[in-house]
Image 1 (cartoon, helix red, strand yellow):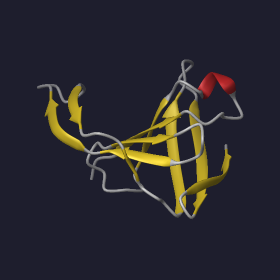
Image 2 (tube, rainbow, N blue to C red):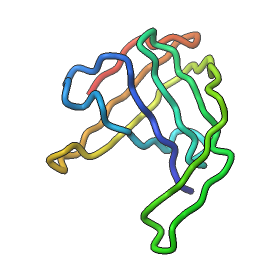
Image 3 (cartoon, helix red, strand yellow):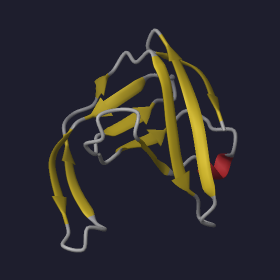
Length: 103
């Protein structure tokens, strides 16, 4: 199983983490791009064409248009920051709206 990507437009507690692209294994794990909007909605752009480079470290992905997921549940996301420090956040959604996000 691979992973999916998460971008967070919603303000994070640690501002230097705002521009990170996070990974998650909470969904299908097919390189889809999820975005937590400033308004607290979770959008998904499905990966429709994925091309990996020979060495397996580079991906070229073409995405569909974003769709609202109306997600209800917990989303765990993680990344490494500019200092290679591990960063984790947990986002909780109720009825499609972000209820809280914690590191």
